[in-house]
Amino acid sequence: MTTIDYYFSLLSPFTYLAGLGLEEVARRHDARIDYKPMNIVELFGETGGTPPAKRHWSRQEYRLQELRRISRSYAMPINEKPAHWPTDPTFASQVVIAAQAGGQAVGDFAHGVLRAVWAEQRDIADTDTVREIAEANGIDFAAIESALPDARDVYVANTREAVERGVFGSPFYCVGEERFWGQDRLSWLDDHLAR
Image 1 (cartoon, rainbow, N blue to C red):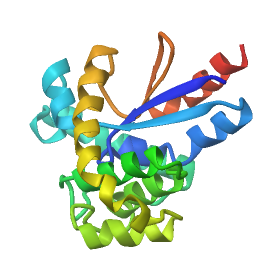
Image 2: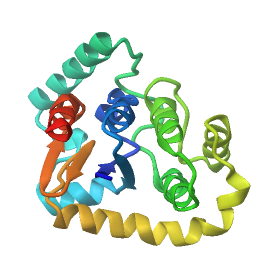
Image 3: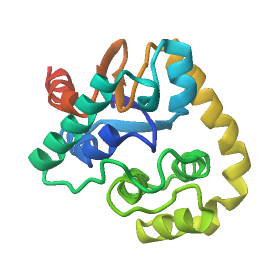
Image 4: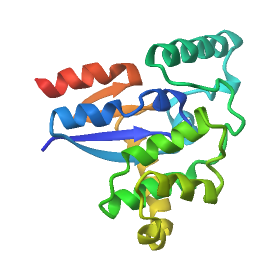
């Protein structure tokens, strides 16, 4: 079975706009997704990226235009400047990691967290909010609580691994040596898996 290593940040609007497209591609090709949430701020620091607030005004304006265009095209609501962004995605990332390690499906949960930030004006740094999103998206929270501390170490390791594999943004999909960056590359990933 082919594995798609999925490096992503739960703060990324482009990851939100990818929706559940990766899951659809994986189903089509009977591929497995290894969800690898990572720290996008550290990733930028290691790979030469610039956080949005520190970019030239022209890049900031263009990013907002792109978000509007993509959200309209995909029929997905988006708050271009969410109330709780940037915020700390560490706990939510730990839940993704611990749930996946426990054999739970995490795609709906991860998308639920992204939707909370970019469409629902919710703060994913709040543990009660994350717990609510988890339970609403089929995560057995009680089954993973004891694994959450170890998941923090995996979160750190995912970021190091991402840098080593040439990942520099979110969402990022890797199949072996092939790398695909951005929600608009899902069709290319689909084509690659079909070959």
